[in-house]
Image (cartoon, rainbow, N blue to C red; front, top):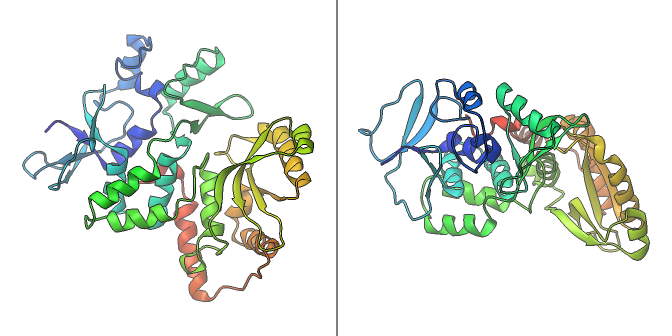
Length: 354
């Protein structure tokens, strides 16, 4: 069996932009100087992936644990598509197989977050210094190559951030089929439960964090608002089109109104992982356009969910707009909320690395 990366190493591989992978191997047809590749490669053989490397093996005799390698024994079936070849001299577990590997040792909330990323329109990649310098030069010179739809999100000063736009890597249907095929396998129950908490296609970690903290049931640490539709497209009225100067608007978090009450549109703003504040003018136009159509528009900022007291006020306001009354939490429910916050408001880049 060839070298097969798994667990957190596989997750890091899928988070790595193709333009970065091209720095470590002759792939994607990008012309990168040997000197730059040599400078970035260092002494490692696995490109941008951190040590120790997590590796899938079929038995204990195949490899021993060292400071640079952590083997994981997989004695079950390996169906077609569960292992993928790469252009870097190693193979990697498929995205959904990777999620099964990680689900066995991660909380349901964090499995949900990782699913949101792989099934969403974003990736989080924290470039090393040499990589960031190279990527920034491509941006500054207008020569950044768009490979497989991957595009970096820039801050207000035009600098590379940790957030990338890219097409989804897996779909809900793929994960459901995988869960059905490997029913009873360790981690499948947690993976299936996490999948139930994925309510749509997200564009940023902030959207995911807000949806989970506000929407998950109180018994699991949330505020019990219920599921949101993520990035719901709304066709605008003629008047709203004139305001927004576009035909449709995508709402970050959308909830149908209770009987006799308008729908609620939550716009996630101002987070380092949501593209920065350069979108403010466009967001203002969109918010006014949606308000002109009768929707309740809430402009949510990251610091409002990061502070427990402020989040409670936001939740109380939203529940009121939905015809419900917020009830104080018991000590047990408050503990559940602290546990959920510890999972959700973590360094996103560290997800899956425990």
